[in-house]
Length: 157
Image (cartoon, rainbow, N blue to C red):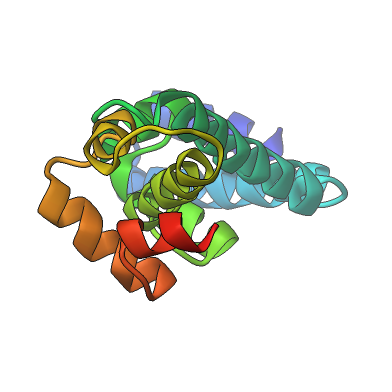
């Protein structure tokens, strides 16, 4: 409060050097406000921010699970979680260990494996159901993730 009173007095008096004093007082006030706000948040900041990050990642994972059959962009996921692209990508990777694209690809492969086990759908139908762009892309990614082709996997189960 004293800083604010001094700041107002300097604005009114306009004595030589008042601009320098105003800048200094403004900086001191800003520092005090930052210290006060961080002190007020220190008890819960670690938990609440971490919780909100975890909730955002969980929301993104739910969105991916619900929409894995569609084309999903990174900007769409960031928008769902109310984070910037860069921050969302960094946050998602730090919580899951993979990028959202890798997560989506793994999710699609798991869905494909489930369909190969539980249905009589053809491999091309499963490719379409799991939103892979082409059969060759599906087969390549499936082999990379499982070590076998989709047809070999279907024979094994």
